[in-house]
Length: 183
Image (cartoon, rainbow, N blue to C red; front, side):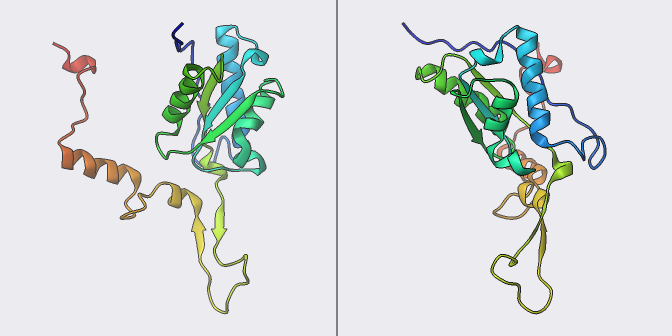
């Protein structure tokens, strides 16, 4: 029998203004909220989900590096369920869906939950050189948001890099699936 993947529903994390609404909310709490809301909306108990894939680019807070596991257990998934973090810049949420589908298609999972979150209001600054003793003079403080939002090859902001690629390949903003372009 051929495995089939069915998308059953979806909810998104809440969002607010940078440095305001969620500055005191751990990022994984946003993910837990969205996961619980999604499961409630489709009427599925969390303990029926055996795999969770979470997309995240800027891990924040203590649980950020283990966010899929934190969100899974915070959603009441079983302790013997599996969790995977994925980071693919702007495509992390999409990669979470693809990876969840792969788990089902390869029969490693029966029911998988895909999601993602960011809480850039809680993103850290990194003090470079501090681990191995700082040298005399000024050291560099790096904004992790800036690191995550810049294309690493020419340091353009990701939005600028996408616009440049769209120009290079002649891609416009409208697609054939957009209602305004349908015949």
